Length: 271
Length: 271
Image 1: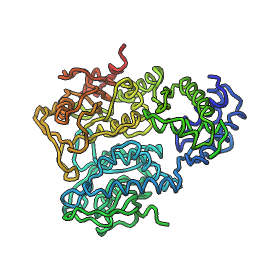
Image 2 (image 1 turned 90 degrees about the horizontal axis):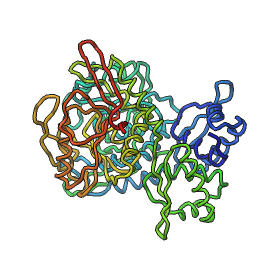
Image 3 (image 1 turned 45 degrees about the horizontal axis):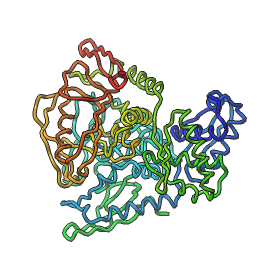
């Protein structure tokens, strides 16, 4: 397919956006668009500049015979702050408070453009780390893990609280369920995670941290390593037995009786 | 931000790709990139041509004061066929067969680039219909619904088989669980679906159709309308009590004892 430069800009940038964190040889584009590699190289320079100016992401050029370009999605600090501030305001709506100190989040975590933005913020924060998979627990964490995995271009792994026959053999660990002070079980399908994987754990809401501690102990059962923990929102008032985590939003006050909630930006925005 | 044409190509096409099915006024781009609306209009023509040639999608121009452009993602028949054929081969691996006639799908439905491609195929099939939300049932259907909703740029709605306190008030219906011939309950949070919504139902695997029939009856509880049903794979051998559905893949033979599975392309590819 022979295209003009301006058209090549469109199709090559579309390709890179759909293949983040993946090395693509310039020969692929040169052959596909029947153009000299030097022209493709100039195209990439223009795309790189545009991506940087518009804070779409970074393009890294790897030289040598097996070289090519790698696109890493980013988000500007201003945009990340704006997205989080908007979400803070949405989360502060008093009709989200449910009996028992829970907060209704499902509408936010089922809207594609919100998920995409949050995915970009979390993925950007960990962009210097090598990540092979994103792990979460069913059901609420799945869309967020999906969104982060989408930006990082890696698979996501779903831990279950119940045992489903469609998962095949599973490994289970016990964990302390924060909401009930009980010991429960969580399960992960044996073939869903390769040994020696570097894993980012993602969840929707962090209370005591029992679920996440459970997932961390699952990681060692799979001879895999924790890269980090990221949550959409945390409850500041609860004591957590977690070493380190990053939150997008933080619930500072939650008064179920008087239907009052105060939300701040999470520790992901701390300097 | 003042950019050259070739750079504008990159940032405008990126914007359109991230805002599918959404009307955007050309003034938005003209102001943002400090350029005459006539130049933006020419930019759009070039992007439209490139999108069509590379089968990225269609750009429709709406004229008039409240006009603008709408991007609709598509996929070429050849690419859709190639994606489905590759997935058919993956699904035909005999070690996917689990006891009880189940098939292990989790690895395919947790890989972002597969989900994105399948999402584009399903969304393209229904692109002429007005869709307000995508509905699925927890947990397995969630990533696929997320992917389709992402392409259609609408929220997705998760029906649950258990009752979670974090969902607030729910509506429940009974359904016949195909796998166990039992009557079970499914629940949908009251605030998760607006009345009068046009809904596409998506699920991972179709056996008897009981779960989907349950979701259809939930739709009437929410005064909403069924647009269509799409599944990743169906079991051809099972009789279904469903009026109409589209499948990407179809399991023609499944012999658990001899570990044999034969998969064909689904009825989405029938003429």
